[in-house]
Figure 1 (cartoon, rainbow, N blue to C red):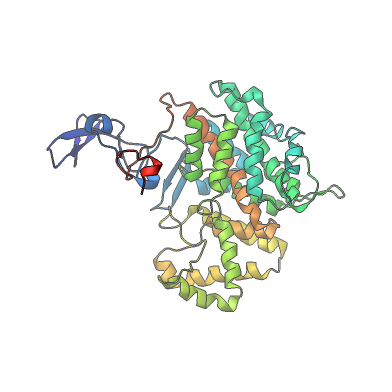
Figure 2 (figure 1 turned 180 degrees about the horizontal axis):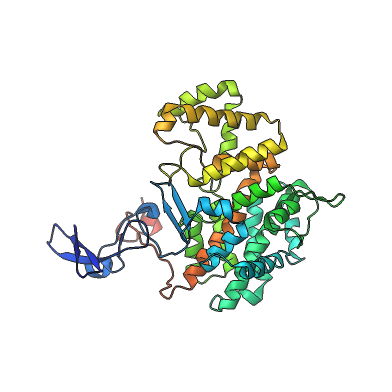
Length: 438
């Protein structure tokens, strides 16, 4: 194989069949950032061959202008802005506007957008009855899969995906209502009354109020917790073409309604290999049990033959460091300091962080604490049960899912997704009647 220039601006990749000597030239496409890609869309037509890429880890499934990740350098950008800048200077609502519309809003645009989201936070009153159909001990993600998908039964006026205005309304409704549904899910599982959203609170304030407010007493806004929740939402808003985002895009390619597409993303996120990483951190801390046991488990983590792994350290994508972790570490320290919590598990987490960061084995391999390590600690400190962690991930990621869905629908070359396969089953064989089978 070789790459060659065919014009000043265009390159091709020459693919040669060593058995026949036949060659085919495939276009090479270059994006703004990241490695170039070989366009194989006409490969089957020209050669009779498919590509084989299990899990699509070497395949560019789409063009996107939303998010760029460079795992080697520890870079995460939304629309060209680094995640560190956005987390330091913007609110989650600003980041949501950026992902949806392409640019940061001016004051007038932001005021209108924030108002549009705020005034969509209420859900249809009959949705309350859906919750009664679930057992009290149902997993919150099971409830979310059901109630989010059910939104399409209530909002018929925004299901035409080819109408730009209806797409916008659906996007606003999903961003606004999923936090309400998430809070209702939490309240249902703990047996407390639902708290209706308040228009005088901003997005993270309102979400925490709906989760932890109670009718008998006024809710006190805690700016430290609000700031931490805002940071968690920003840092989880979008992460390129991961499993759940790809699920949303694939569902959307069939022209399914947006509520169904986001419900499919929630189902994909539920998998422990995807959205359950911060839950795994706390389960690991429970396994360690006590600070005196940390050295033993550190040594076990270094042993390749031992199944124990330090959860929340290192990252599949980020080979250097997770750019989101530094932001959340600061918020984590502020939350723990403000709440003054005396929780052995949280103290254990902080001691584990300290020891791992000083251990040459982890430093040399760049196995630093990632965003899941700190988000799990923060959410536990706030009072969320572990079963709600992935739900909170979904609240944040809804913005990314909706933006990815909207971008895909507006792509002129939209076609239904149809991955191919390498078939390894039996070749055609004769049918044998049952009385003649051995």
